[in-house]
Image (cartoon, rainbow, N blue to C red; front, side, top):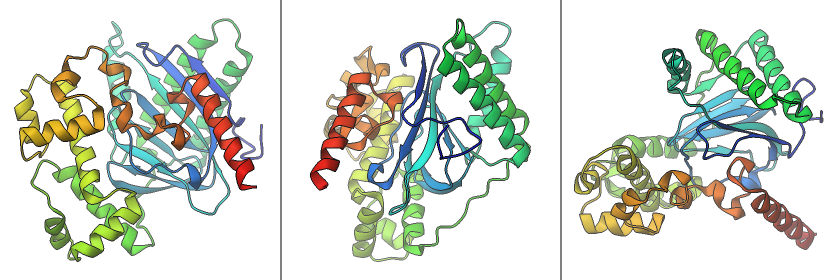
Length: 340
């Protein structure tokens, strides 16, 4: 156990893996410490579930363009295809967190209805849980049991980890009414305004949106909005909107039989040629090629919209091979030595 917290078993850069992320059932428990230098420029998404558990005092999360502040032992539950990113405060000590990336098949005869009910907690709005101390300690106990199983690696540990994690989800589900999380306003009014804008874009992306139109809606000048938008999100207005539209187009291409021209219209693109051009810029393939590719769920094509796969962003081990992870760590060490 390290100094980050005296109750949760935690070892920096420790991870527990059950199967790989292409299996119908897999887990990666990633114990890591992150600072503001590792903050991403844009939200990412993936095709598996994610549970974020803040071990340290505070941080924040951006979910579908909305800003949420977090405190110790808050849980963020993210379903597949949900745009999100963690923000660590600038100029402070690194923050410890546990990320669980996982996939659990619900098509289990006799338990399908119960499993589907369990996963309704991922539909919570916002999908963040803050519990009283008694429940927090039960959550910590379950995470500690998983840590011990993953550390000792005794025969059958994978089955017991699966069992403990299901118990954790069940605990969250049966205590959901005890959730005390409430969204807090950002003290910086300018940043608050920009996140109101990004939230607006996430819900109105299918409409014809221009910078001037949005600036008028929020009663600010277009020049001011453009400058502050880039400062807060790391992207300009057009690029941010394009990524939202491409993300939604990907989901329609993957999981519906809608015609591509209809997807183009539903996602707010002004023309089919623009749709092809923007989609190809972000995904390196056209929409029709993306739909035809039988390996799209391997995330090879989704990679371009997932900053955690960018080695410059120091991704979670949940999305890295061991070689990639070691390469990133080596690059960080070299950069640190150069600065010194």
